[in-house]
Structure formats: structure tokens, C-alpha cells
Amino acid sequence: MAITLVCGDILKLDSLKPMVKKVDAVIYSAMPGVFGNETSVFEHDYLAVETIIAPMRGTNKTFIYSSGAMVVADLQTIGGEGTALAEDYVAKVPPAFIAKRVQTKNLVLNEAKNGIRTIVIRNHHPYGKGGNFILPFLIAEALQHNKLFYINNGDNMLLFVHVQDLAELYWLALEKSAAGELYHPSSFEMKVKDLVMMINKKMTRKRTVASINFAQAKQLWGEIVSLVIGVNSNLNSAKARELLGWIPSHHSIEKEIVTIMSRS
Image 1 (cartoon, rainbow, N blue to C red):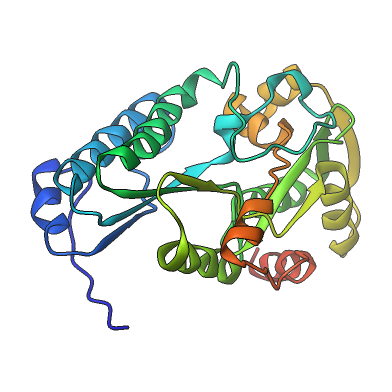
Image 2 (image 1 turned 60 degrees about the vertical axis):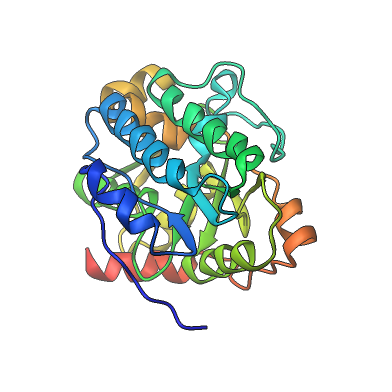
């Protein structure tokens, strides 16, 4: 299948509609703006998605939206064990800064009723080829401060998926998914405490590993990073496996940790 790329700018809404008319499918994995003002970032995100979707109504074209696991964050179990979350799980009180992203996800799924094959893929921690957030962050913290921390018991689960497996899921969704479906790309999960211990094990010189509470974490890292490290994001990927036949082939981040350390 031949693929031709066309370019637009999600911060220049007028550039988007002409681009949509030229394509058969849109895979949206952008994040407009820079972090630091998350309210503004997700407002721009909503407006860009709304603009792209409008000319797609009634065309049966495909729109795949990349969301994130923070929209289902359970703030009652920071640093603690939580249950696996199914695709239809709705957070009762998501973090305030992410509320607009919840609206964007709902907008996308609702548009399945309007002649668009809309699909949502709810990501958390993609990794591979050195690209990730939480691994470089924790490694940098260890190198700079000689300490590694987890929050409370460190029993909260983080979901990981290798970029190659994630790309395969997007392709399968593009080929096979029905409209209005949401998928979790979970190759494997790890407790944060186990992740921290694995990082420390790979260090040439071992660091101090300790528990801190959420208030201490926010003082050290800020609220958003603390939530990323502290929430339970154990997302059930049964639907992706059963409906799309998705079988991830990567199930460890040990090599990735070594790769990132070699570049630090």
C-alpha cells in the first residue's frame, strides 16, 4: 500500500481542513504547544481535533486519536496497587489539568455516529530507540542526586509498549477496527518500585533507593511528574488482542535502560 504524506500545522487551524480532504485516514499523535501550561496544551489539542473531524463527517474516512492513560488516573491509589482498567473505564475525577483531554476523547468516539470511523488508542509509556519519558527522567535523577525514589509503597503499575509493537497496533486498528472503539496498547506492566530497583541494578555505582510520600514528590518533581510516577496505570489490553489480533513481541525494558544510560 502506497502512503503519501501531506503537511499541516495543528496550531494553524486553517491549514488543516484542506489537508484532510486529500487523505483517506488521519492518525493523530500530535501534542500542540509545550508542557508547563497543560490547560493551554489540551485546549489546543481539542480545537485541532475538532477542526480535523468536521470535514470528515459523512465520508466514512478513518480518524485515529492518540490519548493517554492519565485520563483514567486513579488519584485514590497514588503509589498503591490498583485494579486493571478496561477500555470502557471512566475516571470519576480525572486530574484537573487533563479534563479537556477527556472531552477530546469523548468527542472522537461520539463522532462514530456521524459517518467517521473514529478510533482511540490510549497510550501510557511507549519506549524504544531511547525515546521515553519516565526512564530518562529517573536515570537522570539518579545520576544527578545519587538517589532513586518511588511514591508510598511503589506498588502502582505502569504500562509499557515498545514503539514497534505500538506501530503494529495502529496499523491493525487502521486495517481492522470497527468505528467507535478504544484500545489499550499494553505489552507488559511493572510496579514502580520494581522499575526503580531495576534501574539501580544497572547502575555502575548503586544509588540510595527510598520511598517518599506524594507531598514530598510534588515538592521534588512538581505535581504532573509526580502523578506520572505515582498513579496506577494498569490498562487491560484484552480488546486489542482479541479484536485486532495484536500480539506484542517486546516484554522487557532492561535493554532500553542500558541504552539510555549509555547516552547519559
